[in-house]
Each structure stands twice: as C-alpha cells, then as structure tokens.
Image 1 (cartoon, rainbow, N blue to C red):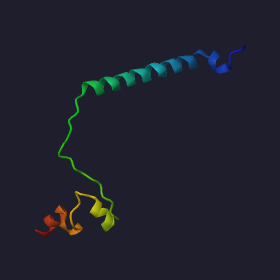
Image 2 (image 1 turned 90 degrees about the vertical axis):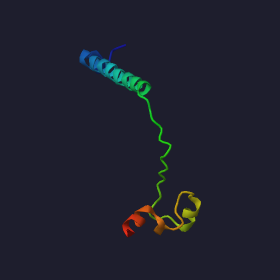
Image 3 (image 1 turned 180 degrees about the horizontal axis):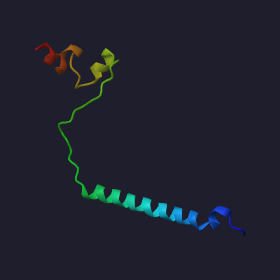
Image 4 (image 1 turned 60 degrees about the vertical axis):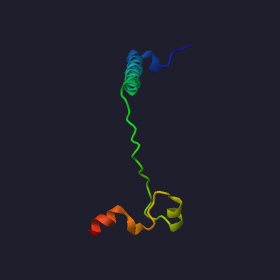
Length: 80
C-alpha cells in the first residue's frame, strides 16, 4: 500500500504532533486552573433579565418585578 503524499512529508507529521502536544498542554493547564482556583458564590445576586417588550402578564409571573414599571429604583433616584 502506497502512502499518500501528505503523510510521506515529515514536516506535516511534525506539525500535527506539535499541535497535539500544544493543545494537550493548554487543556491540562486549564483543568489544573479549574481545580486550583476557588470560586465564590454570590447569594445576593438576584439579577433577572427582563425584556424591554415585556407584557403585563409577564410582569405578573415574575415575583421580583415591581408592581408597575414606574416603581423601579432607577426612576426613584431620578425623581429625587
């Protein structure tokens, strides 16, 4: 069986071996950093994205939403 021209070229083989080794090192370093670095949970985070085109029925389903859109903290700060 005859080898294909790309496999017979040693530079192509060296390139793929180099890429496999480089990606393995990067992957192992990423796994190591995920194990070593501690994560901090933020229990105070209650951010809920609300679309600008939300309907009144959608506001009723969200327990954190204000009764009306006029009662947001941004509007209260702007009024004072």
